[in-house]
Image 1 (spheres, one colour):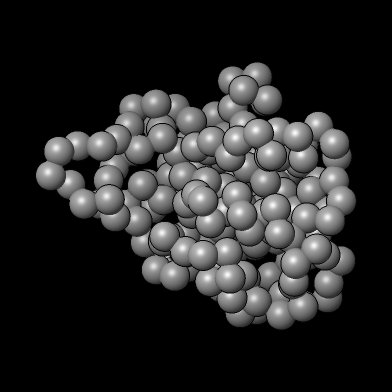
Image 2 (tube, helix red, strand yellow):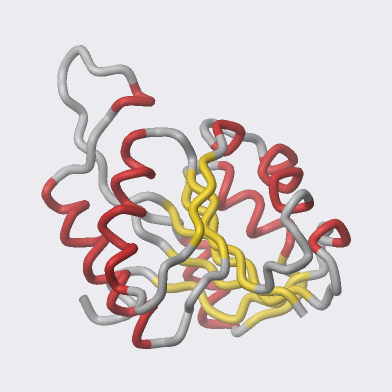
Length: 171
């Protein structure tokens, strides 16, 4: 069994003259990170590895989220997650070492929303309904995969354990 956690970056700012890749988090994004980090820690959603897009807003999301966890978590930056197709993100997942049981990816839409939809075969109806409605900033999908190795992950072999937004966790 493997657990995949897909966290969309927190709310980003759109300053004039700044390329999309270099957009920083907005003040709202800073608050979102702290709230989602607290939720993840309280729920025991502790990753073994965090793979983070190279975009500034995802890097900042991880840096603000990281202090919520009691132990140091290895971070790996991967440019392939930025503006990625679901197949590109899936390739990153498939390359994850077998020693990792809980993998956190911090990235972007629409890639995360489309990947989650393709992986999920079953799940809690309320979580599926929220995911189908919208994958907002700081949205968190937790997908359990009945595989022994990340290389085995494929479309339709996941169970959506939960999909949370700041609205659904009461923040």
